[in-house]
Amino acid sequence: MIKDIFPIDKWNYENSSVLRDLPKEELDILFANITEDLYSKGQIIFRYGAYPSGIFFVRAGKVKKYKVDKLGREQIIYVANTGELIGYHAMLAEERYQDSAATLEDSIITFIPKEDFLNVLASSKFLSQKLLKTLSHEFSVFANCIALFAQRSVRERLAMQLVLMREKYKEDFVPGMQVEINMSREDLASLVGTTRENILRILKDFKEEGILETKGRKILIKDINKLLLIAND
Image (cartoon, rainbow, N blue to C red):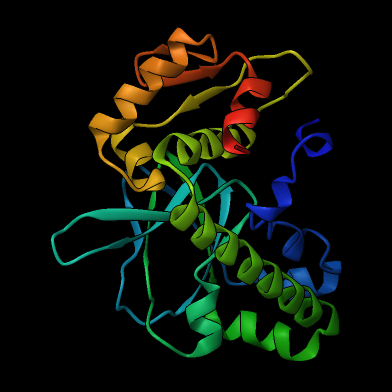
């Protein structure tokens, strides 16, 4: 497992346990008035500056959280996977959204109304403790990401993100199985904080070094250990 050779938890929010471990009676209240929709790839879930009216649960699929600068350039700050919560930071802080969210692929998104979430949070010691622990961990991940951008080269950052995305794209994984990362080069560049041209150049280098293969937009990691060596340089 990747956790045995790489500290994946330093880079991944992993808030899926917040709802998964919630007692059934509290979960029933939380999900009493939900709405669930199929979002097509690229569809906006919420936008920067809007007021939150609830939280979102990624029932299936993947979602990018991102910011856009004054020149219209997008920076992906996190990729949420199946089972994760998004949109709760702004609601807890009683602020507008400080980022935007959109689907990276066709996804099923569950909306939980603000009132239901806050009611359960107010009465559930378990949920409040889980959220506090999750928020503390996310702060550590955020600090690590800042250091990554400040101290690492584009090549090292790309290697790191490919390691992380490989974990998110695992499905029915068994040791030795190749994992397909299905992500556009534009989104990958936004995640790494560089240009599409740089991504294409470094991916070509990685292919020549036997680290990965590409099939259209799909990236198949062949040698995770080589990738980890680059990411940890």
